[in-house]
Image (cartoon, rainbow, N blue to C red):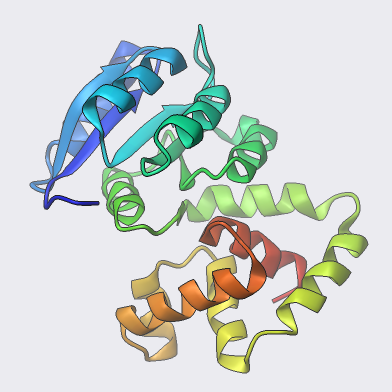
Length: 219
């Protein structure tokens, strides 16, 4: 993020959903909605022309779905952070979105404060995991090939220090840097430094992937 005000593009094919999200976001003094898109293609074009800090992407959209749009965004505007809007019924799609480098995901029925917090976290370079959705996605991952994933994850985690493993475990719970800091009696800045170090050591693109790895490792 390069400005004090967080510039956001909303992409959802339902006008009422877009209106609701806009109303919530613009209630925050540090967030500005610069454009709205009704499909993924429009979202990519608007991201190119408006250079937002964050794009909110619905998964199910006509013309171009949110997952395809996410891939296009990563190629055309890699600096833009993309947050995925989802429902519990789309867990498999969420996993694909995280693999494509999404900055995180939240449920469409999230509280207004959670939506604002997610946008702020994404703009600050942190990936946001909706706690409720995270548990459901992790449950999905737990089925099938769990033993293989667990062994690989445990080998990776073994390379971390004890303190790094502690921070990683809290990422697995979906905690923000601030919440993790309070739990570990550390400053938010210190936690952020640990998170950056953990991502580098585990070769994870974002904290969402690190959180999933933490669950595979049994932390």
